[in-house]
Image 1: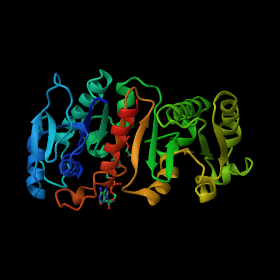
Image 2: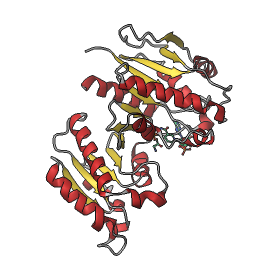
Image 3: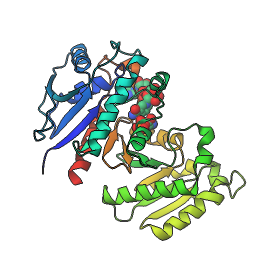
Image 4: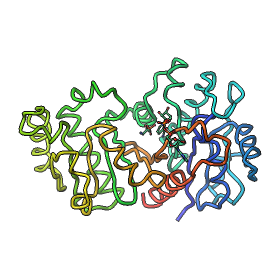
Length: 328
Ligand SMILES: NC(=O)C1=CN([C@@H]2O[C@H](COP(=O)(O)OP(=O)(O)OC[C@H]3O[C@@H](n4cnc5c(N)ncnc54)[C@H](O)[C@@H]3O)[C@@H](O)[C@H]2O)C=CC1
Ligand SMILES: NCC(=O)COP(=O)(O)O
């Protein structure tokens, strides 16, 4: 098996992303970890954390080599402004987005085998005048994918989302037959092909309380979700269960044999997953033309540079990216 080359973007420079990247280097990896970042930022954060770090220049023409302990491979990018841990600065937003652009481009052209992203701060990127709702939407747009799926994977539960980073007030309108069909098809395809599950069992949440209570508490189930699932059952080699009331779906009886739960919106599915597996979960984008994984947490600005950031989810994200790349 050839050694894989994984792009890493640390994300918001004033957050814990650089800390996590420095911590990654404290063990060896059986893939080359190519970090897209300002080298001075990483060296400064390593010093602050009292951890050893040696940066090796990325040489795309050479074969990928496993990453030795204490080292990272680097593609240098330059910050616009000095970084103070915990203090957002919109001057550095273009830098953050440039690292994502480079990683996405070079995954699409086959130079990298996957990308693992650290947490970005969506607010400061928008404040800098760059419209940005999340990595998921950014990479989808760059790759010209109409729909992709955000799926968070914890050891005991995988939750995929029909809608991602949109205001709650827009969710109902966004759940169209077309979108629900596309998202379910992508989820089914990737569970089958990337996760080798022959006939995935997917539990689907309703949108309204008690899945609409036969239309008395909302009609999206009757008008959209039930008929769309009915069509999909005829088309996909999958067990689609639901729509079930989201408040009772997440119980062991169902989760024991669920390959994934499909939630209608961000805060319907992710709080459950994070309460079960925060720090052990991986965010995976399904439906992109390449592998992308990420952490299950945000920028945790108050922990940057303190040495208190938990690296658990980041390690899981890197391991999952390598595993998926090796099984492609
Ligand atoms: N993958 C990404 O790029 C993500 C980015 N975000 C962004 O992060 C920013 C901050 O969001 P918040 O809601 O405050 O979430 P957050 O995850 O940054 O923080 C929530 C709580 O969890 C703690 N925490 C988070 N990660 C931790 C870690 N690795 N080790 C120890 N404790 C940790 C924080 O200290 C805080 O108490 C927002 O701009 C949000 O959009 C949020 C989630 C994912
Ligand atoms: N809650 C997940 C999150 O905010 C990260 O999303 P993305 O940046 O990976 O699209």
